Amino acid sequence: MSSAGQWWVVIIVVGLLNYLSRLSFIALFAKVEMPPLVARALRFVPAAMLMAIVVPSVVFSTPGALAFDYTNPKLVAALVAAAIAWRTRNAVATMTLGMLALWIAQWLGK
Amino acid sequence: MYFSRPDFVAGARDMAPSLIGLLPFGLVCGVGAQSAGASPLEALGMSAVIFSGAAQILAAQLMAAGAPLAVTILTCCVLGLRFLMYSAAMAPHLKPLPSRWRNAIAFLLTDQSFAAAIRRFRESGDTRNGASYALGTGALLWGTWQVSCTVGYWVGNVIPAAWSLEFVVPLCFLALLVPALEDGPTRIAALAAGIAVVALDSLPMRLSLICAGLVGIVAGLIAESRRGAP
Image (cartoon, rainbow over all chains, first blue to last red; front, side, top):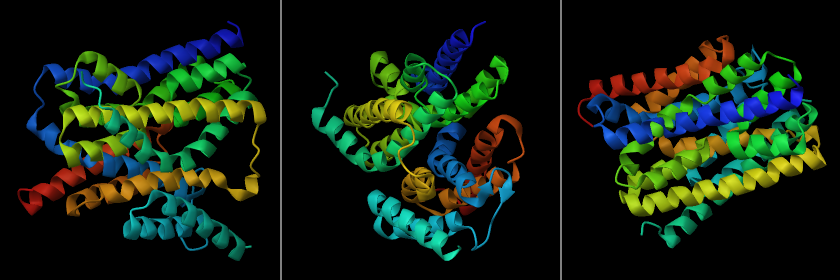
């Protein structure tokens, strides 16, 4: 198969399966009643998943190499940004000051 | 008539700050597709149909590395399993809507729009307005995503690598995470997920992400039941 055909297979199959994941429980729980345990569990989804997304891009200096100390500029910057997010609840301030913290930490570490 | 224009606009407006994180992310995805040898139409197909930055970057990397097609597809779909959780969390709020609405909101479901919409649903409790709000967040993200991926594809990486601008992506998620830490059990859920994602990092196909999410949810449930009724 040509490489061009391969791209479209990936686009259509991954696109379709991702859409089915996105639709799955929205469609199911429109028809059947949600079990109480599932309903209780759902309020933890944003906190758990967002943390699982953020942590790897902060604590690994290169893929697989854990850098959990103050010499890791990304970790320092993320802690600064988390404190700003906590105090201000402002996404723009979190992102801009977090980037500023990263640049300062990188510059100090040189 | 379900559509509420003010809520649609409010959704788009509340999502606007996240574009600071989304734009560099889209550029990276566009550059990735271009360097992996996708045609312009294939690159647009990825951003328009898959509509998931993490899956697009991964697909481009695996295709460039000549990985078997089945491995590429399976890995991207494992990464998409987190949408199952988002779907379940959104489900109770979307139940009263016509299926057309549910299908549209499902297609536009992303990490960012989920985090924003679920907060809105919990705060307002109004399905109709919440749905228009969710649609507003999703529509803005989808449109901007096509533009930034396309610019990345054609213009290449205009931003110097030394600026580390890709770091704005985790910062964007961090800004969404912090308001979700509303009480003790949610904080424990996040802490457990954060530890688990590092501990499980060696799992193949990015399974660590979905597994860590599940660990966090179980930890949150345990914390809640030990604390007594919420």
